Length: 240
Image (cartoon, rainbow, N blue to C red; front, side, top):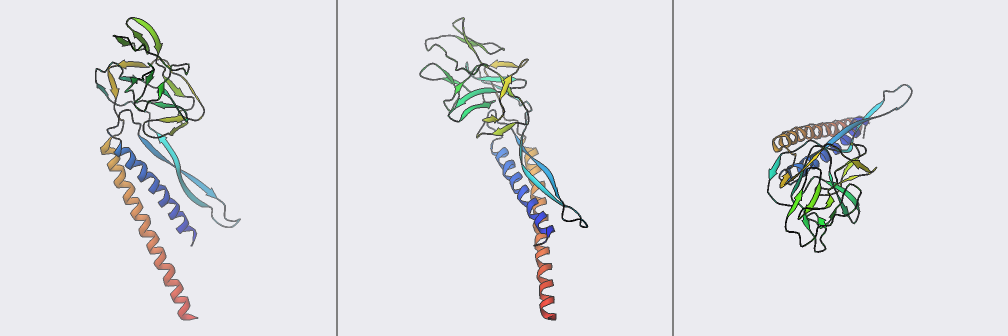
């Protein structure tokens, strides 16, 4: 197989990964707090020899998280929270702390604030948040302070990755910051609201069509290249 075929196959593999990401975005267009993902194509250049042109290969292994704000839906749920501005809620999972914008929370039997998967929601210092099970009125201020029957019992933390490019999909609406997080200032927490997915179905469908067409072009090139090589081999065989 010649270099042109290797380059095209590498490109096809990247387009396949991008198609999978787009399909996942579309599937989560209605998922509360979901962050759209994209693919970053990078160019890798390798020297072939002192008198030969270099070989350029595409790499599409990097997945980018779209941090743009999505719309807010009013639910009036006393433990439904949405972040207006940058940052994430932090939850404690068996695999370590994870970030999320999905703020549909509840209380566990032990009185701790948890998400829908039962993971404990953490404050800015990384500690679980307890709410008295007997509390009748729960109010959450825009700074995240939780008051139970007028008494402050904790504060929901809002954090962000130290490096915005350092976010990785951890399944569902969870993200992992490999190099740690830091507190976020200036964002507001809204009680009784949930943030929607920031996926635009129209945009994703348009991109899906573009990727599909690009893949079909690459496939056509490979088929033509295969036919060309077969023709050359056949011609050489007849003349020998």
